[in-house]
Length: 363
Image (cartoon, rainbow, N blue to C red; front, top):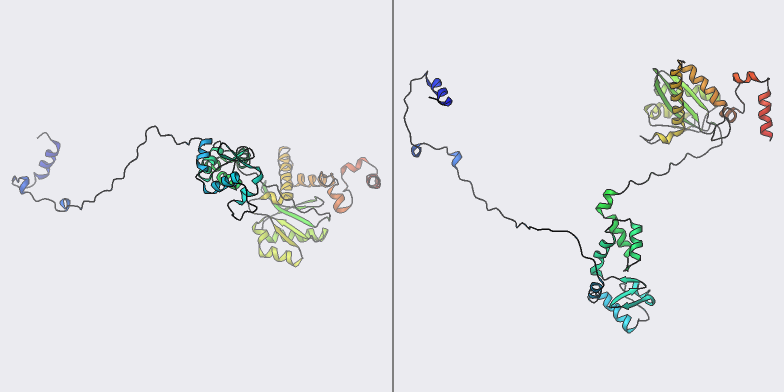
């Protein structure tokens, strides 16, 4: 026995006493389930349309075709009779009113109706003309300009607009619409009337609360242990005790600013709250710019191995005494009507800087 299958059967059956009998196929019991007949369903064969060298295009509309279809158009046939026999004194047919108001400029040229230098297209050919006008997929304005140089029919501008807006190719390849210009916050001349808040960090394991006065551009930076409403309220109480209550506070939609505790605090103090839209930090631009400045100071201080707290306080003193490009004044002068004393004042006699400021104001 050379076949491996027969060898396996021989080994398997060697433990039994058996007798081999031959049963012809005709006498063998068939598997009934595998031989049950299935109902035959007649499949509907659809005719396949076969094209050889098929090109999807359209032929250009010619003058003879316009002349031929003009005679088949019922509205243009009435228009032809008016041109040849004379116009009536008035027209009550709504379909003829667009032509009637242009009757002095409509004439017949070689069997085609003309309005000035433009051919009046019958209704049956308008779709073909529109395709020809938009074959290069130009925009609405350019397609209208091209149409006005050759053809006309009532409401052609609306048809061109609808064609261009429904063009799949133009919609797929169209450029993204330009972004709308940002709407600036209302400019206020009263210092400490609108404050912008935002969190900064963590930087070197520390988190800060940044506060900016939109009018004077005065910046306050406070280190916070937790970014919750209680920490923010505690800092604002201390700040308001020095500078007074603002009229409005602008912040993002973070949990500390949207909490009931923070809203109650603002309501009790008569402060209006404005929240910037989600995922749009540019709406709170004053605070975001201050955060950006502080991050730059942190990077420079880290490079020079300076403590972050000392670097920020040194920056705040210099910033508050510097003239701001937007206001033309320093934040200290706008908010406190004075220049903060710094180490640079050691170069001058006492009172010389204030005297110079008063002289400049008198000028």
